[in-house]
Image 1 (cartoon, helix red, strand yellow):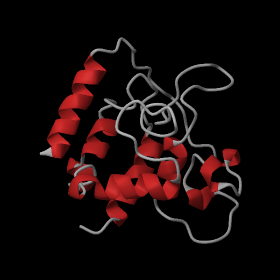
Image 2 (tube, helix red, strand yellow):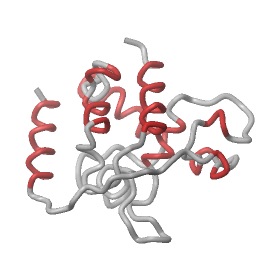
Image 3 (cartoon, helix red, strand yellow):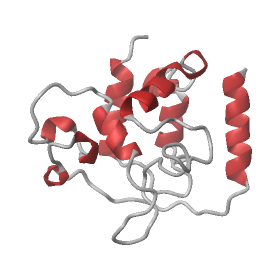
Length: 155
């Protein structure tokens, strides 16, 4: 019930905004990666990093991009400003990777990720470009990272 109320509130709040969606032709560039996994927007296995990756690493890196590109000033495909960070204006996911992953996995009994790639709220919203609202839709490489993370979760 809480998940349905959250979705209704989210849809109503988004419907009042006049922000237009932009389309992205971005590709995953492994040269953008560094040993700071939070800066890695690609599949963590493409990075020149060592150690074991959490399947959520790449998803979190996309989600935590600044709300606006510092070079172009254009809206990004990150979740900062609306769900992540001190100025979050909708359902607050948290600030750290652990906080965000925990909320996504366990909020309202797992309502956000329940159904996995085919039926979860998060996958549906991102696949259909409903989210990020007013931002650049996630491209196929980014959606593949989301799918890999969702597939790694216990059902």
